[in-house]
Picture: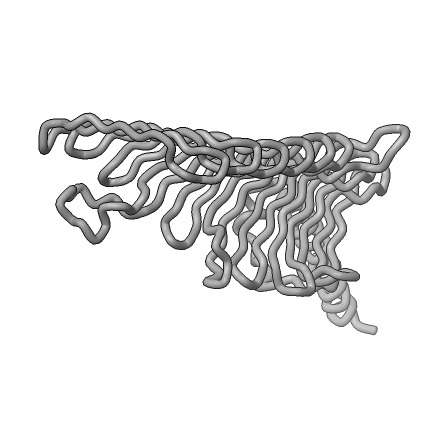
Length: 287
């Protein structure tokens, strides 16, 4: 082989070596840049983002593998939901929908050694427009409830109820679809003892005889037999105070009229008026 041929082969070998070295250096630079980008949050933010992530169920766990957050499209009686657990794996918060279509939000208290966790706050909206928030005690007994309704068949448009430890309603406050507002007090046996109410019509014209007897406000006191013992109220023409016997029969009444006249009357146990007296007031005077 001639000297010229040897020189040409040596030159080609050097060029091949240079190409291999350049490729190795380039690969090293690309790897280094990739590692730097992985450590740089700014570089991550500018990286390409997948348009969507499709999973049937997503469970986020802690370093011990304990499920902390669960997102799922459906359950046994549930629709899409989000559940949050504490470090012991006990459910503390749940938000989602139920099979019947209502939406719910649940708060659970911490689990103790002798019982499971207890639902303490429950809010839901059903498919008929009823929205309720319920507060329970540490034994799961309903103590306070608040709600509204858009159902035309319901006469309770908004309410708050307070119950005792036996879950018996003791105080109820609410409004009805005809504009009346009510406060009802009951005893431990569920008997209505005090009833306050106002209606929704408040015409100020005392000359309107057609509505002159519509009640604006009243309070009714009952006994354990659910019969009235005392009644106080006012309408557009009079203010009343009436007292009843144990059988619910009126025995005494006081009233003042819009004209300023005052009246007192007594009844016997047969319901007959035995005495009545009225004083004349000045026309147009408020009592």
